[in-house]
View (cartoon, rainbow, N blue to C red):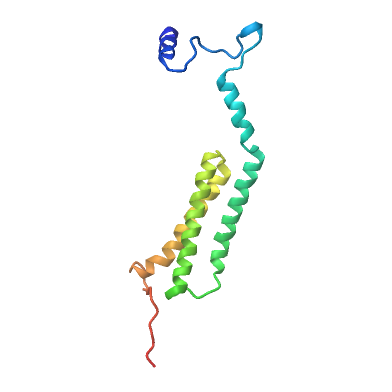
Length: 152
């Protein structure tokens, strides 16, 4: 099996003639560093430290938690009209922010923040359902999108 792999590697353009081993002695008896090791070291130097990435992830999650909690204390009436549209926009922002934190935490393999993000996204769905369902006929008390104009 090893010979087949070596033969296929030789067919690649730009591939070394012989397999590289980072521990094998190179020229003049010194160890040669492979391009993979050099490239990985360069990529690691360019990336921020894991502590900073983790702190940034928790900071973003904290901001989304703050947004989700403050949605329960919305200070303006939201029954109809422009204020309803503004509230719906904030609900969509909550839902998207929860999903965003979910994707970032999944990429960073952080289970605690990912679970928190799932709860935040679910909370966004609950807020959206509270806003939409009465207006599309799935509630006991229907609501309207636009405000009634009074003719006095």
